[in-house]
Length: 500
Image 1 (cartoon, one colour):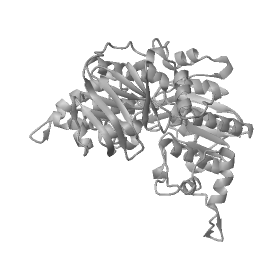
Image 2: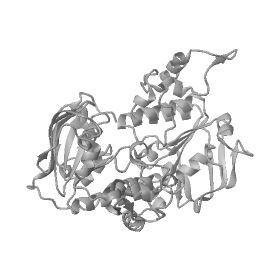
Image 3: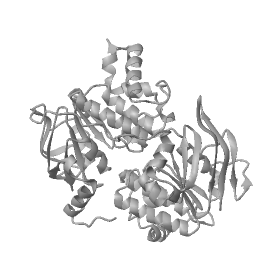
Image 4: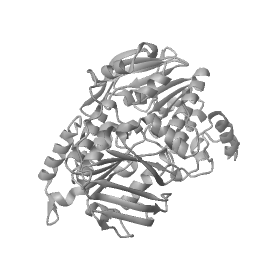
């Protein structure tokens, strides 16, 4: 089965997301779409999958033009999508989500053989999911696996995967890449939309580069280099990835100090400290407890033991999110969609939400002051386009992440916790966010940084702690250790050999 998009154009309001883009997908290949956030790669993937109707151009299947390529026609034609924004039913089990809409009926009666069908699919994929677990109880990485299984359950011949590894560990990513290789051996086509260029170059057969909604190039992966792809994406070479580290007062009193912290959510024994003007990283494998540490400091998870000190003052055991915000603590959460942003509200409303008292007097909100402050922060973060009156849902993932960052920066907190601050963000937007993080420390904020990309922590942090099974197990100097050494140390601590 071959699918082609010819002369595709797509507008969202006044924004031209795709401008006369053409691409051909061959049977049995992995075809990657890459570009900066806002370049149009996800939009093109959604048009291939029938999610969006193009404003211009058309889709062809096996050389024949399709009159109306919508989700129903795409599914009937053997095309499925694993979207970055997961679309699962949280109150249903894993198995029921996987087979939702394609349940087995006989004589109008629903047959109860879901578990047998799930086990047969699981033997092929080996994701290790519990078919009877409820989706609401799964991590983001596990939910992403459910989405992939749902596409495969429909026997799709073309599968569009939008940022499929953004929430997966290195081991899980390797497993997914092996699965993709097996799918292609069966003659299926995988469209791989991603900002992880190393993974793209490793797994793809061909790459299409988009920039500002236009097609830049399509070529065989063996003819491309990472530097060449980056230059095509940006229209320029990318100079230094990480900004120069700011100086810090190594002898200053800590803004944050944890001693023996434990929680109901798996934190067992965590001790660490962060000083003003210092970026401190948490390095750990998926499930190590890094996010749970952040949530406990912010008052989102209940503490069961240990102490937390802020500016030398011990925080009470009953500590809420409202208390944390009032004390000058901010948290940029791992999931911008579930925990960070109100997607149906404007950028301005989202960014000012945690600082409304700053722009109000006697209960009246001063819109002019609010708009001026939000626009200033979003301009510093290079939001494109700078239209803070528009719904945040209409912006690219990178711009949404900038809005989430601005939401907490606008308060100028004394401590900011960043949990996966560049998740789903391209190389150009990453550089902007890295600079913003460095600037926060330069202004005297204490920064606690969590990232599954260990190079990110090592490139930005002054110090870093190794986290394993809810415990702090070591402290490392980011300038004296490599990402490979960190991964090997973490696997050794957990008693497992790292997979390459």
